[in-house]
Image (cartoon, rainbow, N blue to C red):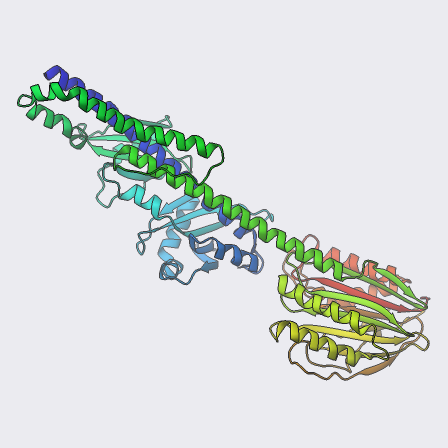
Length: 580
């Protein structure tokens, strides 16, 4: 009987160690999935971070709002005093998000940990369902890595690590700190060192305290961290102690019921394992909605919970990837619509008048639009810029384009009437929520007499040719005598008109604010001064309208280099007659 008891004890210890390793592996896999899923999800958000302005774009805020398990995000960097300061933040309107953003001590500590390891994890004091994850994220825009700290809702992982009945589970950092675990720790420093120094990916051993605890561990594959599962030896061998105490009294009954108990135990263990194996095969075939019903609180039940958690994460990641693809497709559609609104021919001639346009779309769709059309003996030039970006701006631009096709068929139409009709169309489309600046010029192609009206758009310039001397700022004539309200602000608006007599050799240059708002890699704005200088140099150097506008575009390119455009960039030039 003693020999049998000893053999049972050894077998039980081996089983507990093997099961403990399995539990540690399962938790390590959960942690790895959570961490990688978190990093994959925040990476596109960080890609939309504006390093120059130190803020998140509208797309970043939209992606953050879609990530329902991320309740807060902070970007920090170390200043000259060695302390971390906030650069930008995103949060959801919940108490935990506010507590996270204002916990400067926690954010400072996480920044220090990231400097020692690529990823750091901690449990905040203010929440039992969140984890704080910090990582150094590389940017695809050739900027320095960002230290990004997120408040991530991971209740299932947190409960799996802290609230299991059989094992005490710990997340150990590569530096030897207990990042997550029970409040009353039963694992000492020597044991932690032994776990972290082990060259094996996983294993099990008795601790240094006389074998009081049985320790199992497994590497997470994330920044050198490991999961440790601890069970007290006396709890693991409780069945053996009961067996020794009562074996003499129930030996005969035990002997007669051994076969029955063995069969029941075998079925109880093998059936859940078979169900788990079958569910794994179905998931491998693409059935991500499969789940395993957990009927026990033992190791098999914990494995089933781990499988269900993994299945939920796979389904969630698939849905998020689909949503991101949908948003990307929508943006591509908006860009396609915008490109169709602008004339396909950039260079056009109307008798003695030569018109050439240049349009560059911003990274995030804007609302620039230009057009030129001959109505009777008059040449009409149109240019406008809708406020905002994305689908709303594209909608307003489309409304302006649709209204213009009707206006083109109206006899004896004037620039003021054009703006009144456009104002009505845009107001009815957006109800005052989206506005548009606009400039319309009407040129009599027989006499060069030009009538124009302006709805708060950037005033165009008239450049008068000079046969010998260089063009200077004094030679630029701004058209500022007809200013009116923006389109779409009110249902009814009136626009005054002004006149200007063009002579042969004059060049009319129209543009949107994206030209003067562009920046170089240092973040310096080009401004109106830089634009005027480019006009003077290009007009002095070139003769044809094509040469002049090409020179302006080259100077724009030289200034901004590879810097992304903050807004659409549009330039329209109309030259009267051949240049000298």
